[in-house]
Length: 234
Image 1 (cartoon, helix red, strand yellow):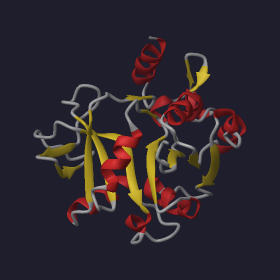
Image 2 (tube, one colour):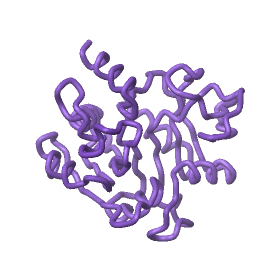
Image 3 (cartoon, one colour):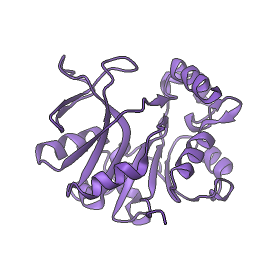
């Protein structure tokens, strides 16, 4: 019998300015990938990994996502929505608002990420880590995006999306696991970025890591969309 997997939070509230003018009237989650909204591919991949419960954090053009996905039954999932409201809360702030809908531990997935890895393996690694959170990483070597993780002997030493270090050869893969307690210090309704939370967890030695070997795909750029379409067509 399969283990029960944590619920997944999908961060789907961004403005996706890099994809303008397409995303002026269409949320990034609904961008067509091989003639089908991206989130359909994303949800099917989660179900393939035996995920059952999904919470979607929405913001910009949220009603379009809700109209398409509904309660998730079409994907054999149970889907709940949490909206940012009139003020953008940032990625960690949005998760903080979603905590009442989540179990004590949960996955976090970016709304533009397609990640063909083994979610159960990550969950088991997290369960044995005794940490507040886990960041999955990939040895990117700057190939598919700019590397932003300094990793050595099984441990993340630094993570920074802005101030890169030439010794950074890994990248945040886009799939994290958190315990609710990791968000205790974030004020309710405050704007807070997930990258800042990861940095704090590194400083207090509460961030586990798992190195994924499968490459990531993303829809945050037009080049990424074309790559994903090719991958899903094979």
